[in-house]
Figure 1 (cartoon, rainbow, N blue to C red):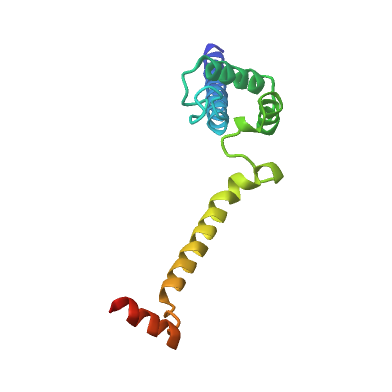
Figure 2 (figure 1 turned 30 degrees about the vertical axis):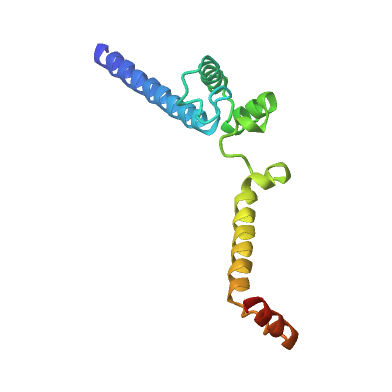
Length: 139
């Protein structure tokens, strides 16, 4: 009987440890998707700012409450705005964020093409009046 009880306790402890490890990995993955509002160029997983620590604790609480990843991210964006999402979704408000670099690249390529094409064109030949004026200036 004692052996069975010890075995049961071991199995329960291993299951609890696996669940804790799974929740910690999930919390870490969520923290890597959210931007630190203080540091701005770091995720809350990488930041040591007090606000990032509080946000990580909030994620842990919500995971313990049984919230899904989508619900947790939705809670954070409702509370702090879309800026908190490290990789913002493509929508009307983030259009320039996603397409801006490509639009600038295309505009720069168009300008470069126009400059190069302009240099390749041969100048128009001089008229007789322009030739005579140039001769007079050179003499």
